[in-house]
Image (cartoon, rainbow, N blue to C red; front, side, top):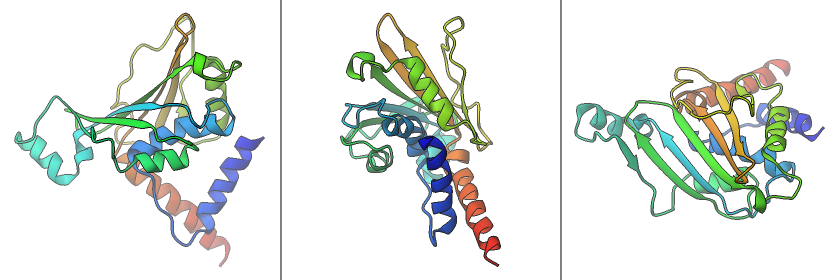
Length: 219
């Protein structure tokens, strides 16, 4: 199937590349949710997406984090990027396979690290045979063999009601989830990761391992 080919070919591209760039923390979450759906034709490339994400304050960089911890830049929640020119939007658009620029609304929380990113979808704007269940199946298949990506179970008996942005702190793990309400025809995609782990150092280490493995095989 295509998903298996994509996984193997992408790894091969990274392994054989002379230089590799790592994704930003927000695109890691957004692209992980969206690219499988655009590839499978479940999400139209021109869907008018609105993406919301909250990161720990360490996402502001060293100076911002130090100011927050010193109390000079402390806040409970700070929404930013309202000029709608956030540097990661072009990356999300390109690598999620989108034909239209999504609206991206990021924020910083009062905790140090961890990201929760959510994307709302309306079933009426999706192809007629697309449902929350089918989206969940698509994500599950894409990441079936992924070592550090988990698609959370989807249960109508015990629906998901909350997400903790700090659950993967200190790890290279990424959780993806699909919540849906059949009565309202609304679907919410979500991702949780550590912005300093999977969203930064973790991705770099994974790419280095692929490249190092390829180098060893040619010796």
